[in-house]
Image 1 (cartoon, one colour):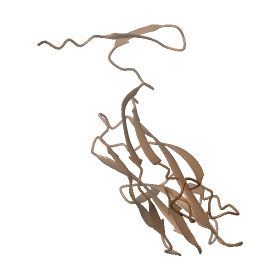
Image 2 (cartoon, rainbow, N blue to C red):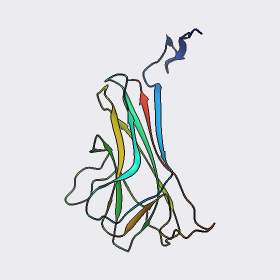
Image 3 (cartoon, rainbow, N blue to C red):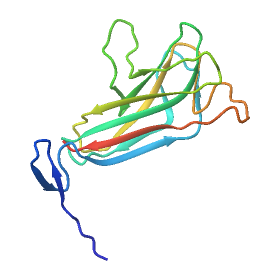
Image 4 (cartoon, one colour):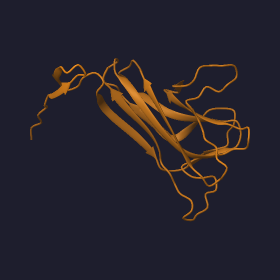
Length: 178
């Protein structure tokens, strides 16, 4: 068997043609993890890693970027006045979070809390990261609760019948040529 690599013809926005295997802005690698099992936490006041919701990627160049997409499917059975948040991390360090402002929680997104213990919500978040590294990068999701319990992949009322489901969460990393 022989393997032949073919060049590809790309057209830039200005209409000029480029021959090559990749051009700036092209997605050159996609890796993804889908979490299909359940996870719950009642830990309050500190960030907790969501078990099984992480993804590693090794950029081919220090100039390349990584587009990270997270879908977190959950039930946050919270009382009025309590809050839940999620954040993206790279190598255990928070990225893609809001600016510091007093004692407010810096997060990537807030967890939706509904009126029922039998409803799941899917929160989506994207972050375009510049790791400036050609070494393996591990992206993960952490959650923070002020009170209550968070259920990922199931509802709080997880009775074994057809009225209750199981739901996936995903983290996808796409390397984009710089």
